[in-house]
Structure formats: C-alpha cells, structure tokens
Length: 165
Image (cartoon, rainbow, N blue to C red):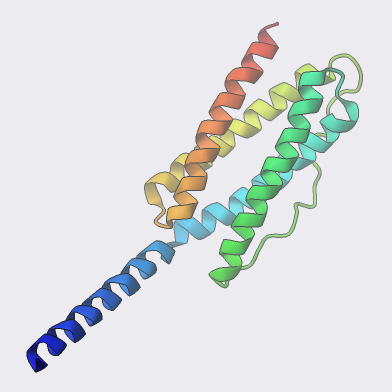
C-alpha cells in the first residue's frame, strides 16, 4: 500500500513539474519579442495616424473603409502588445510626436498618394514581423507577427489593385 501511495505521489509531482515547465515555456520571451512589441506599437500608432488623415480627407469609399478597419485592428494589437510589455515589466512607448500623413495632398490625388504612402508603411511592418518570426520566442508574439505578415501582404495586394485602376 505504501508503495502505491509513493508512486501516486511521485506521479503527481512529475505531473505538476511538467505543467509548471510548460507554463514557463509558454510565457517565456527574449529581447527580440520586447523589441518587436515596442517597435510595432510605434509602427501601429503611425498607421493609425495615417488612417485618421484618410478618414477625414479620403475621397473614395475604399480608402475611407480601409482607414476605419486599420484604426480598429491596429488599436487592438497595440492593446495586446502593451499588456505583454507590462507583464514583462518593460516600458510601453508613448505615441510618436510627429504625425504621419499630414504632408499628403488634399483633393483628387489624395487617395492615390495615401495608398502609396500606406503601402511603403505596411511593407516595413511585414519586414518587422518576419524578423521576429526568426528571432523571437514568445508564442503569442510569433502568432501576432504571422497575423500581421499575412494580413498586410493581403492588404498590399488589394492596394496594388486599386493603384492599378
């Protein structure tokens, strides 16, 4: 009987240790994860700035709808990455002091110039996401990077169609 109880106790300890190790692995992060979240928060804030300009000056429905979509998606990502940084006891960056998109022309050519500006910006975001995918360790960060990479690639393809018109 003692032998069975000892085996149950050992099994329980092993199971508990295994669960603790799995939890540590799931929550672990490296400097690349911190850098990604810090830089991507700033990048997303810039995207929101660009989108806000388009929400107010965009001529076509595609540009206005895209700007609304970007604002919502980027803000959700910022909230998530900010929570990661806080849990890692890292500073959350403040919004950038300079505003993006203010230099874009007003009038009929706005949509085309905005889409070109946004394309370059999204390409940079894809590069950032690809970098952390090879150097990061934090599972949720890697998942977000993949979501950003695929989502922004799809957005670039759609933008290219509108620029070709």
